[in-house]
Every structure is written in structure tokens, then in C-alpha cells.
Length: 258
Ligand code: DAK
Image: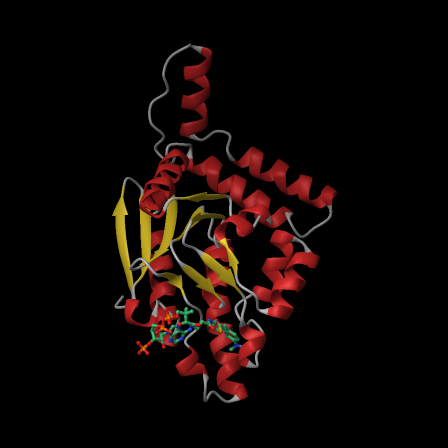
């Protein structure tokens, strides 16, 4: 995967978007590499994914404008579908993901961060959906996920104006969970990833599934989803072991994902 590095440690996969010379801008090849890295994380049964950008300046400075500049409508549709498929796969993966936003998260970069479950930002992070200034709409989910995260009013302000916001404002509107100093970002992301990875993986996956499936249906249907996911955790070794340890006042053994 030439444009994405994959590191695996302690059940955590760190995916680094690695095209620093173009501020990690997303081209077709990079999107394909990202898709492959996500599938590798799935195959390795990792317990959490951290996504970040190489270097100190950018998380991802957007889709590759050079590559998009001369696209036909048909090529643009295929590009948008590719990005959407990869981002949706990440979002629908039953593995929690954390975006460690280390710099520019513009256009497709903001959209990639929004496809992760949790966003942590460095004080250097800058967010925007500047597409209307390039004569296009956001094409990797920005018109949909931003409003779901921050509400329609703020999303419309950002999407219609293309204006940039800093990390503090991103936190204020709920676009990011937390803001830390640049040198503390990866420790914060990996620390949270380790906390998640220490929980029962089957339960974490079921929780993400319940949240994801339940988000866009009515409450009664969503609660039905919760019942099914709750029940699916029972009779697993991890559930039996953790509850027996609690009842017997012992420290539980580490979870084994079975
Ligand atoms: N694409 C390609 N190259 C980029 C890039 C990008 N998005 N962003 C930066 N680069 C490249 C620059 O061209 C430059 O390359 P060289 O000239 O050195 O070869 C290098 O990265 C360093 O950038 P700068 O020299 O410009 O660095 P500065 O510090 O001066 O400025 C900047 C940093 C991030 C403010 C600036 O580079 C910038 O404004 N970049 C563009 C940011 C942007 O507009 N991003 C949004 C792109 S639009 C769709 C599918 C997807 C999308 C929409 C529709 N469909 C198919 C429907 C998504 C769209 C977007 O993401």
C-alpha cells in the first residue's frame, strides 16, 4: 500500500495517509490503498483503528485537485463512488475508528475524519469543506455527515461559505471530541484506542453495530436492534468470564474475543 502505511500493535491498527508532498491529498490510487488497509484491519480482527496523516502539516488536504481538474462527469461519478465506498466501509466496519487530525482536514480530509467514529484534533488542525470555491459540491459524504454531526444550521454555514475553522471552533460545534497539543495527539489517540481495545471486543462491535444501525431508524426499531445486539453478547466466553469474575470478586482475565 504505497500511499497508506499500516502499523499493528496491541490489537490496534494505525493507518497513516502517506502522501506528504501533496499534503496527503486523496487520489484514486490512495483511496484504493486506504480501502486495502481497511480490509487488512478487518482481516487482522483489530480492536480499534487510528487514522492520521503523515507529517506535521496535514491530516488530508482534500481530494486531489490536480486529478479532479479535468475529470468528465462520468469520471467524477466513479471517483465519488470510490471515495464513498471506502469511507462507508470504514464507517460500517464493526471496529471503532479514531481520526487523529494533525493538521489540514479540508474537503475529502474533513469527510474522512467524519467517517471515523471519534475525532481528536491537534491545536494545529484546520477544518473546511471548501468545494464550492472549486466549483463542485462535497463528493465523499460531506453534504450528509456534517449536518448529522453538527446540525443543519452550522453545516449549511460551513458548506455554503467554504470557510475554514480552527480546532477550538471544531470542538465547540461538536465536530471533534477533543483538542490536544500537536505532540500529544498520537498518545491521546492511542491511549483511547488502548482503552477501547481492553474492553470485550464482541461487546464493542455489537455496541457500534447498534449505534450505527439504530441511528437512522425510528426509536422502536432502534431499540429492537439494541435487544438483538445485547442478546448476541451472551453465551460468549468473554461475557461468561467477565460476569463470573465480577460475581466471584476476582480480576477478570483479559478478553479473548470469543
Ligand atoms: N490536491 C492536490 N494537491 C494538493 C492539495 C489538494 N487538495 N492540497 C495541497 N496540495 C499540494 C500543493 O499543490 C503543493 O504541491 P506542489 O506545488 O509542492 O507540487 C503541496 O501540496 C503543498 O501545498 P501548498 O504549497 O499549497 O502549501 P500551503 O501551505 O501554501 O497551503 C493549503 C496549504 C492546504 C492551504 C493549500 O495547499 C490548499 O488550499 N490546498 C487545497 C485545499 C482544498 O481546496 N481542499 C479541498 C479539495 S476539494 C467529488 C469527490 C470528492 C470531492 C468533491 C467532489 N466528486 C467526484 C463529485 C472532494 C473535494 C475536495 O476535497
